[in-house]
Length: 105
Image (cartoon, rainbow, N blue to C red; front, side, top):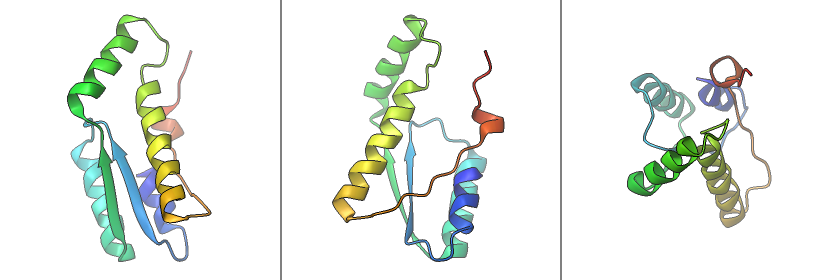
């Protein structure tokens, strides 16, 4: 809900850009759809190639990398900044759920 909340907290969002690695929950998808409807904005979704992403994430898991979400994080920021450059967007507002996504050692 954090990304949806962040979008709703802006006065005049131009649109929502979501990225996915095919691990989305029904609740997450529903929350984004509700935000899009409430704000009356366009939704742009970029989804990674499942087979390629699965292989990459599996490689991270087999390598015992402490944060197996590095491929997801890299993909999200890659799509975000490439879209911003392409669309000449000057500012990016993003949201995180530290409660749900925080790394605890």
